Length: 167
Image 1 (tube, rainbow, N blue to C red):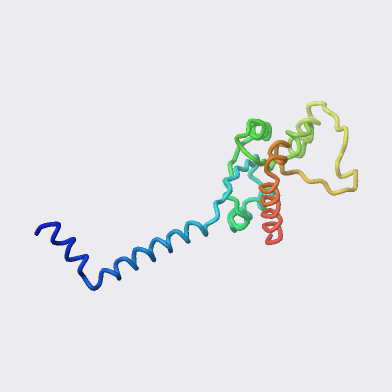
Image 2: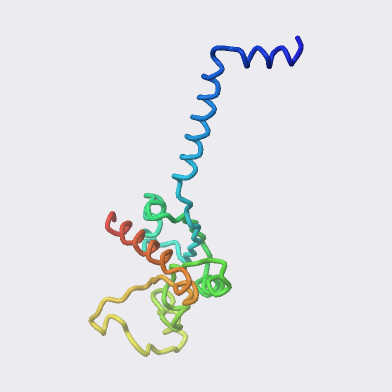
């Protein structure tokens, strides 16, 4: 069969308008779907301990709270807080859930504190003696990131707040 004959028959077909309406609808629907989808902002978060203290971060990630606030979260285990801080400073991660020791230096907890005492080191401060609550993990971010992308930081904190309320 000659291709010109097929094309000619399609033009003269009483159902050709169905084809064109279908094409236009498909174009409009696909265009609306793509335009209606908001792009998630990728954020990489390092954590340096496999402990219950990191539970809220994992639950926030698994329960979709980051996604709800427009973030595509990627949790990265980096053993050792000092290495995680280096990744943060290098811009490889945006956030770090770290113990304060790599950021402040010298905070020890058992069994490390016991080992240090056995080696002859003395404690300058015993946190329970302060009579105040103290967190052994915190959220770190570079100042330049916080200043350049405050909306991402707000969404990140809102996600963690939602995740903590579900715990």
